[in-house]
Length: 508
Ligand SMILES: Nc1ncnc2c1ncn2[C@@H]1O[C@H](COP(=O)(O)OP(=O)(O)O)[C@@H](O)[C@H]1O
Ligand SMILES: O=P(O)(O)O[C@H]1O[C@H](CO)[C@@H](O[C@H]2O[C@H](CO)[C@@H](O)[C@H](O)[C@H]2O)[C@H](O)[C@H]1O
Image (spheres, rainbow, N blue to C red):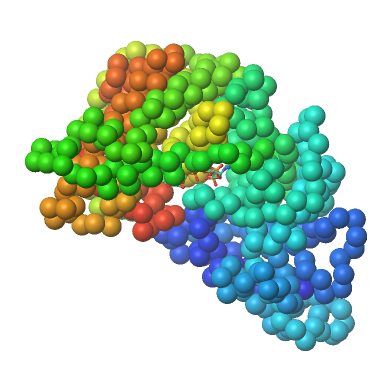
């Protein structure tokens, strides 16, 4: 039933940009080609003729002369069951004449069209992933892996995760969460590598890894720079396709908690603040104050940094290394200024912060860090804060994501996230009406309060004191804001005003 590669590639060119996880929405697609296509069969039973099919596909997408590789799980059915609403989940329909199988079988053509759709919505099909990991199956180039000492429960239905995310997660019966990495990079995914390393040193702030899926090195050309790339001569390490962890049903993600707190603060009777501007202390008076949680989160972050240093070691960088960090930041800024003209008005302030960083002389101590730390990456559970997603920033190269870095980079990421949360609810209001200005001052007060609490928690638990490294933290914050502007332009254009507005504040 699966359409032949050339037909599928054409259909994907139209479908891919409509997916949340597609990271090239700011550029036209030049070409799509199919790297690998592997049919996965549920259980040992052979698939019934005309029964639903599950295909694992790696598609190479050319944009602006470069290639990106996306992982797809495609369901194919002649008839969609009631529970799968094709109109809502999106997908495409291929007619009988597009059906490669029909032609391949000497003209015994199917007379019915087939629906092709994102199988993350189809619990009947995704079960095969659990079965594969439980059995450590090998299917074509896919290697299903089970973590040492873990028994995997099969037969659980999955639902797609509903969180705001760059990949796709499947939640199996409140027991496991399996993240399918969408844009693939060759080699081990740092999320898996770091989670396994942290578990080894007994870190209490990460969920247990239960299994994962690798692409065999022999299929590495499917994730190499272009589809016509020759096979690499030396076998590379496997490419991580998915990671399955223990699901934390009692957890609420930091972003949701923070937004609830901001909403309470915005709705709070304004009498305490009028006629003066609200202060960060006022921001604690509303119902859902977040500051105590922010402080605990700071402490958990310092502990995770200590554990990362224990698991992967530390590297003392040469004096003057700050110059190289600043040069990298200028480079990213040059790139983003070209694609997002609205950034230009803050360029001078940003460059000044980077130049100040370049003048620092103390040799920094680097280590593995989270790399893309924000409120959506942390969950408050009944046992404390849990840190997720050590993948690094999706727009960075694999080498950059696995490189050591300054731990205050993570602190700055979280500080930026407080700014994001503070302004998310007012992003679509254009200043300066009086009401909008008053909300902006409230947003500022909320951010200040929670930034302060987070930094206090981090320093008190043994992390570097952000207040004593203000030049560094300011440069990291600007660098993160520039990154975010590019991320929003490419992934969620409607969110672009959020980092732009916060940047206006940071640039002062
Ligand atoms: N172990 C877990 N238990 C419960 N929810 C989780 C777990 N891991 C992730 N999540 C939820 O899924 C969301 C996305 O996970 P994340 O790893 O950040 O994905 P992405 O890399 O796609 O952004 C998180 O914000 C959280 O809400
Ligand atoms: O979680 P990911 O690894 O996919 O990170 C990417 O997506 C994030 C959004 O999902 C993005 O984070 C930005 O938006 C968040 C709110 O949704 C906010 O809390 C963060 O501070 C902000 O950076 C992240 O930058 C991107 O890499």
